[in-house]
Length: 98
Image (cartoon, rainbow, N blue to C red):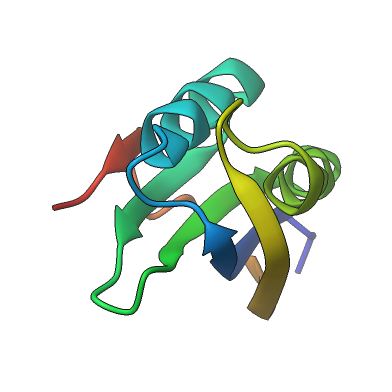
């Protein structure tokens, strides 16, 4: 079976990431990179989500989530989990969930 080259990754971002347009900038960055997935606030003051796409773009998105974020955010910690190869994208685009 040939590799699709597509990967999926779950993430949770800790710090000052709610009320600072973090979700909007994350959605914009995902669309800019051409990856798919979602982002949402949690009741615990974090932002969580999933991103899917080519491995190299997933790595760029991980770096952005860990080190950049929105201009007014403060990222204390980024936790990435459930990184796995997938056969097909499970989302049509990158969205914000509520």
